[in-house]
Image 1: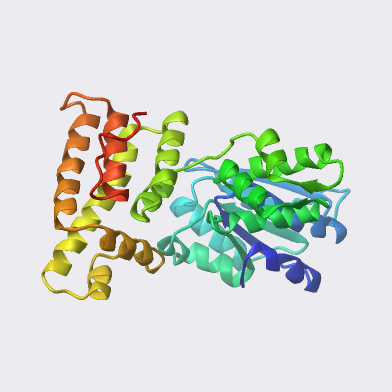
Image 2 (image 1 turned 45 degrees about the horizontal axis):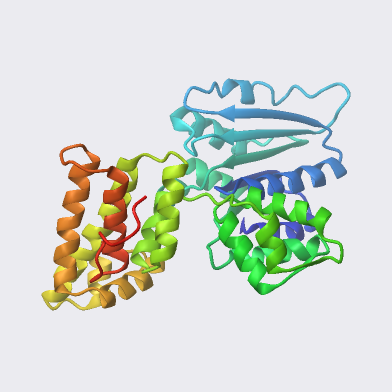
Length: 344
């Protein structure tokens, strides 16, 4: 069974499964999901808890050897295993398959992992967890979903917030749900009439947004210039390596150039997208970018990507993050001068 976190309470009310597999890259929601499973387990008499963190060198015998050793004072046990990389390795995969194929009585297993890709989900060990129990997949919230999520959390805290306030708070906490929840808890203490205005948010909510290079790429290709620049600033502030940022941007620049070349050869856009292996969820932003570009701007983009590559790698004089900013602008606002932009 595969569920989203919002469906978990209904499943728990119908009966506790023997195995849960919680995956995702949102620490707050993953933690809350596991807490909900633990709480229901305690209600049903699972009083003992055993926890393991499994990396590439983890000894899986420490899990399997203790399965028959229940405490004298407890008849039921929770066994939690965190797969730190999402890949248990050959020994770990075999151990997981063996565990779920021979589930001991009075034992609840909670496996957790970062988000897994389609290939990993198709492995024998992952399929065994899905077949034997409940897979709760925690997906990262998009920037469009974040205001509604914050509004829901505020209502749960008996707070009401203006739509503008929700948008501001979403912008300041994007990519960092832990920070968003902390700010809601702070507002819960500050709000006298339980109503939160945009001014209150501006004055009390710190900028705790966190970004990754994939969000930067999406913003640039999606022609969201201001957001892309903000993310680039954030990445530099967080200490993300310039070569990693370059990789993400150059990948998109090459994809746009390849798509443009295919279209110029008369290949229909849907086929060009599929041939280039552009995910369905990203085809809309690529379509928008291709409409914004022309032959001259694509040529300029190819040249700019090469210059940025040389600058970041030290083969050309210049500031790496300035070169990355210029590349962002060449993707996100074709036809406009990147040099005229504010320098980081």
